[in-house]
Amino acid sequence: MARKKVKENDFYNLKNILEKDAVYSIIIGERSNGKTYAVLKHMLEQYFKNGSQFGIIRRWEEDIKPMRANTFFAPHTENKVIYDLSNGEFWGVAYRAGEFRLTLPPDENGKCRMSDNVIGYGFALSTWEHGKMTSFPNIKTVLFDEFLTRSYYLPDEFVIFSNVLSTIIRQRDDVKIFMCGNTVNKYCPYFEEMGLTNVKRMKKGTIDVYRYGNNEKLTVAVEYSDFPAKKKPSDFYFAFDNPRLKMITSGEWEIGIYPHLPVKYNEYTDVLFRYFIIFGEDILQCNVILVNDQMFTYIHRKTTDIRNIDSDLVFSEAYSPRPNWRRRINNPTDELGRKIWSMFTNDRVFYQSNTIGEIVRNYLMWCKTDSLK
Image (cartoon, rainbow, N blue to C red; front, side):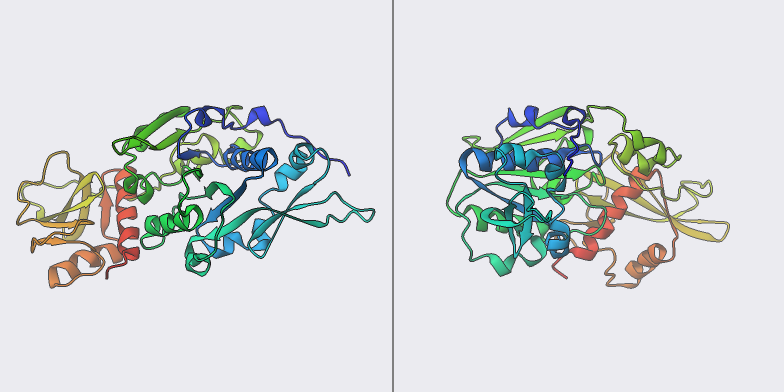
């Protein structure tokens, strides 16, 4: 059977981030630049070097079922990585019943047989409790793939992720964690939960290292990965004038297109009411405007502190005993809250920029998944 080799030098390489020797290695970048391939290859190399196993984490159970999981290592089989690492003993990787096993070379009928060699395990955050009593003492490398998403995160997902890691690691200190994601959403709860304060401002091709605790034993390296080949042959398919497609062609953060201010208004005579949204490090001012019998909300960034913090209506993730503070805008508890929320449900909200729209979109997603309702 003929096997095709890809030019690995044209794709992402782990070399620079491995040199940081961090406990957590987070790699973000454009789709199909080779970051997941590189981590999976590294895990295979570790197995054949010292027998250590790996764990692959995905958000949803559907993503770690055999139909999909059996494709994870298909490029490595196609590129003869496993065949070469095993000196011809093994051919590929198959997934069954939560286990990744090596497969033997094809027989005379062209069929690959599964071996007894378990090299890794699959985990789903959405169903993690089913396997939390199992022990995995030989797992030394963990990959959480596609940790960034533009759709919904699980309620308290970072805590669930930490619990899965705790199930795998137990009392050990020799496990390395990799997290890979496409640049689809810069307002990711993992960045805030892990204190990764500079991710939004990173340049492609750079690595930031964060250190925690007095002895700085816990380290997180974040790489905004570049694409060595710079351009892919397929880029011309996505040359439309749509900013969201730049994530595919150049690795820029994906951002939606949101409605901008429809009419001019007078700040002193046309603003009926002001409220604020605080999401992460961003403070947004929301003006309820009436112009020519048209009522709508216009949201823009506030660059100064909220002046009347104890009386202005504020929506925020933070808990506060102040009577004017609310957490979830989609759960109104009075007439004012219902009127504000009705503008969102009736498409009467406009934004200073697409970035502001992106912040609000992520705040609304958080409102829907907040576990304390």
